[in-house]
Length: 135
Image (cartoon, rainbow, N blue to C red):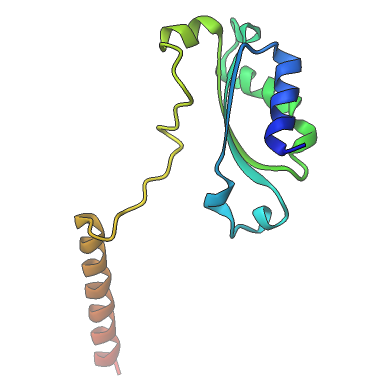
């Protein structure tokens, strides 16, 4: 059974969840030591009325307690969106929102990257000139 299947099974059993989404982003971290030992990076959207009247941190604690057995080897990093059915409905039954979690990678032709490269070259040149002059 895959880690995603295990996560889904445990969360479904514990929370009677009408909706669960799990995204595996382990490929972004394939060179991390934890990833080499098998620990994956996952994002989860979990909808359950068990979260009613609970603060975000209390919701997260419940989820972490449920998956505690998987954190030893199978999960290295885990982000959670824990919503009640009403909250999820207000969001229009939206899918997993990775807005604050997703990584943005610069394209090679990006102006930002070009400016960064120019800054680094300038910094290295100035540092090299100062080093030579200090001798």
